[in-house]
Length: 411
Image (cartoon, rainbow, N blue to C red; front, top):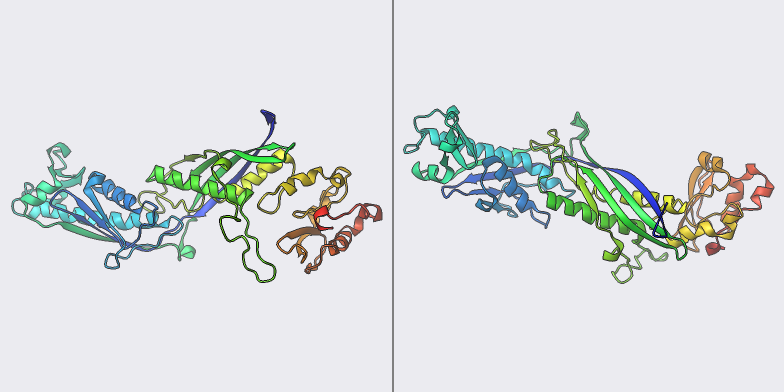
């Protein structure tokens, strides 16, 4: 299929990411000035933890976000989870909810028992708290009293509650259900064979990560991960010195990454299906699910557009030009720098054991050779691959063996 003179390729890959929790503790305080304070010993590394904590308290109390104070990053606070794989949010939800529930229960007890309270003659079970107001259930919220007014009239200090949640990360064997986030990445590439130009023109990511508490932050995380996936598929590679094992391109001048011109605006869609098995809100960790599968979808799209199945990342121009080599057009068995030689005899590749042979001539390149043998392949020079290939194809006759050749880059 073509568009504007460019060959289109489409690819798709699925993805999943484990959804578990770390142990977490939190405290919630309802104050006489009508504000709330939530505290946990976790940290904020730019991932939106402050916002999420305020959202959780707002969910339980009905207070506006600007009336909620977040306190993090202090060893004196209740122990919080680490920040990793987007597990902080899912871990904090049950702890913050438990703390908020205890603070609200204390508030209602105070409303029913404290002298000066407008609900002093009511029973505790007759009262409720929502939208920042305490009210009698039979009278409805309209007749309720605001949080600050109630505590002031009752002459009561702030009411507090503490909550704790157990972790599930190290208890996978005890879980009855497998808990994961899921998704799919769909990619479109354009291929211009005249100048060997490959571009990613469209990426659509569909993610099921439970209930999304902060769609803006969640969408940003997926978009950033897609950019990483494009870099992984087309640009990024660490090259090591074969003598000392140190990275050669360990700087941004030599290590190529994706830039704005390489990345189309990603389309991100969340299914937003709450999963109550994880926590009461049904949130699941997003983690790196936005990265998982992107490179696979891109290489599938590359195969659709060019007919070349790339087996090693990043995708290089050499991979795509190999299809146009004279030997390939003649139908010979070509050993590409990366991949399995199976041209003309797919049954060989299908039944073969995939063994990896490295050559000291080009130490950073790993060559994959399909061999219907059970013996391991030792490290050999490039020209020894000829003998390996002929042994692997011993059943197809000498005439076919004579057509086996190495790629020009390693002759």
